[in-house]
Length: 114
Length: 115
Image 1 (cartoon, rainbow over the protein chains, first blue to last red):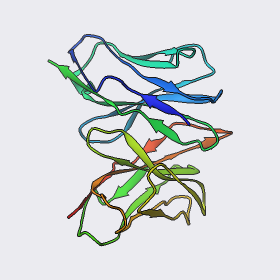
Image 2 (cartoon, rainbow over the protein chains, first blue to last red):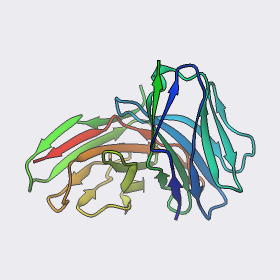
Image 3 (cartoon, each protein chain N blue to C red):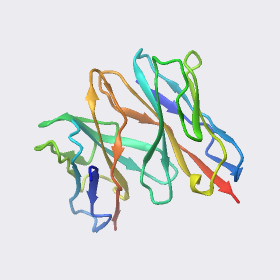
């Protein structure tokens, strides 16, 4: 079974600064995907970025990038030039295995301060 | 526009009544999922379906039931056997290619309150 752990329940960052959210996972699968989702106050889940486990290169989407350490089973999200609109819950998730279901961490509540 | 719709956005029911939450997608995705989200917690999987007329229990299926008669639709029934049904419910869908699912796309959610 897969498990995903986010050890930071809450974080805050000043506008325009950089923040890193941590995530570790545990899986016995060789082929899997990792994701970061954002849930703003509207509660709509929005995909931020995804990483394919067999790719060594870290994924990047504009201001969002990941640090994927496969051996350590670590998948952190870095947000550069933080904006007020980045205030949200952030969930780390993974898929893989026979059931193809997605496992989510408990989330990190990020507040961007003006 | 392609996407996932859930209705209604807010739902109120009396204890002891069954209630059905709607989920429709026009993304032509094979797989659909139902999650429950409680305050301060992540998403917990209730049921999922990878193909029409087939579905599997997730981690917290007790007190819930689903059907998958059409590819586009995956309704969730919260039965009176669910001991603590008040929560935010999210429906999602994804492509299944090979043995690993791609990212899931989520609906806007339904907030169910049972009193």
